[in-house]
Length: 227
Image (tube, rainbow, N blue to C red; front, top):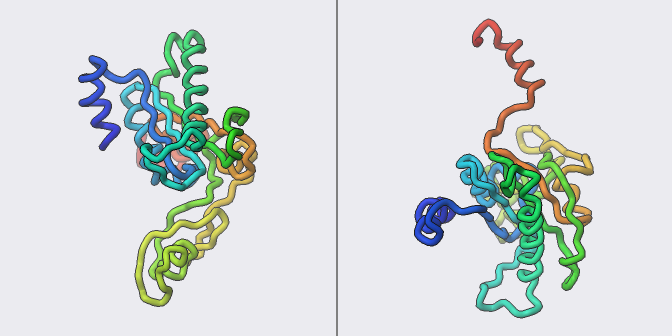
């Protein structure tokens, strides 16, 4: 809602029209692979992308919430902000390579920042990645959420029959027997962040269209039903 308000109400008041760029985040905690479908940070960018506005989702591995009034000169937030500014500056400097735009129409970025030591943010390399399926968190529904690691970490007792959504890692076998897929590709953003090798940049589009090979396979399967 805040993103829509900013685009539809506040931006016209402040700038006389739509924003030049939408930045969603920085979010506390990474948004990688499977969890992206449930991420407000990432889905905000889709609203912008589908209006032909360039958009960037930014998620930081740090999960500690710090009020802006409590920031100090040494706070990590400043380094995270500098990383984002560096990325945006590069997009601005290279506008001529995208038809005079920050990004091609209908395109956005999912950016994740790994853990880093204080003062090391400026030296982090940027890595081009793909969303992939690698993730530290995939949502799953359990009848006894207290029996899951996430539930236990919040002090929810097991055996109470308290149902709810928990988060599991790739490779986890769910009660149905389904295994959350693993993804060992070094290009997947989740794997880049896991080894802290740099800031991951995955190019995203607003429409979740299937790749051509899968479309053709389904056309063959449904050729007696749909044309």
